[in-house]
Amino acid sequence: MIRVLSVFGTRPEAIKMAPVVRRLQARPERFESLVCVSAQHREMLDQVLDVFALTADHDLAIMTPGQSPANVVARVLDLLPPLLRTVRPDVLLVQGDTMTTFAAAFAAYLERIPSCHVEAGLRTGNRYHPFPEEMNRVLTTRLADLHFAPTAMARDRLLAEGVPPDTVVLTGNTVIDALLATVSADHQFTTTALAGLDSRLRQVLVTTHRRESFGEPLKAICAAIGDLVARFPDIEVVLPVHPNPEVKRTVEAGLCDTPRVRLIEPVDYVEFVHLMARSYLILTDSGGVQEEAPSLGKPVLVLRDTTERPEGVEAGTAVVVGTDRERIVATASRLLTSTEAYERMATAVSPYGDGHASERIVSALEQRYG
Ligand code: UDP
Image (cartoon, rainbow, N blue to C red; front, side, top):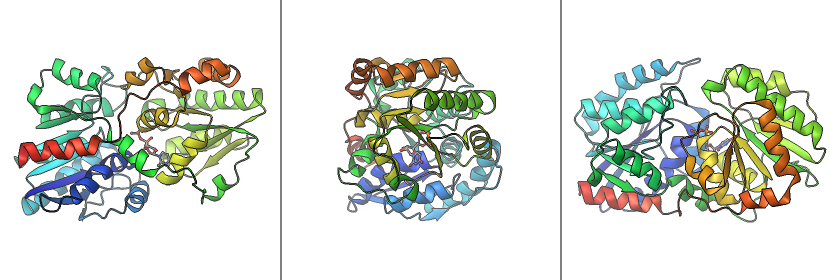
């Protein structure tokens, strides 16, 4: 029996870990699967646990109003080591690039427990973009024992950094496992704001929450959205507003009275997947959404100056437009007017996986720790 403790704390980590945990649970003869949530996000995390019918065996409940990245690390490092001494997992699983990811991998190291990193090898090469995620990735790579790379590019980056080749496994991204298990042709929206979407309009979905966009860049994104709805009377912008107070304040001040802009609460994952599927075009600074959209045939404009997911840009599914108002408006306008430009992006093949990443991860765990 291999006792695996999966530790995560935010919405995107939970979405990407859920398929792995479910697959571990499906092998009770081989794995004892335990889940510990830090609850770095509370409500958005709980939404995902509900959607995937997961329960936390341990809940560090660290979230406090206005918490800083340093607070999160301090709380996890305070609470996780005693738990590790009690649970004694054979291996700890972390995902992605959050403060929880790094802090949990570091806690495991301090307790001499091997940790494995799901979605390893993403880099922009700029230590402050995205902040603090880029550094969390680098540090988690240094701490981990086994690295699950979602793409060949991510694998090659790890190898170039000197990570031993026999510890790197190319798996695909588990986000595609979650997406394919969730999307269905006959979904009916239950969120009131989505049930009322106007079928005569083209929906443009926008999400934004990056720390490095707080302030002027986010104001420029809002101004670009205002320009686009003014220029295209047949579009409607749907923007689930991230609960971070900085994001909420700027987005609400910039867009609350703009016609054909729906500012809504974050919606649960099932609703969000179908909102992406329903959309014509997606503007986002989210990592997960950049990966999901191409599997649904949706062009993505990346509202950031850099991306650690250049695979989508290379494959033609995404364009990095940054946070410059004119550039966002010009690129979106081209896709809203030229069917040819639109189809080229919509039909490009997703580079992010085939929906079997979690199977490969579980096999690799069995081989290494069995
Ligand atoms: N998502 C969701 N509801 C929303 C917005 C996003 O369930 O209202 C999902 C989305 O499908 C993706 C994940 O949340 O899988 C992305 O999370 P986020 O953008 O917060 O983080 P990132 O991916 O940038 O780390």
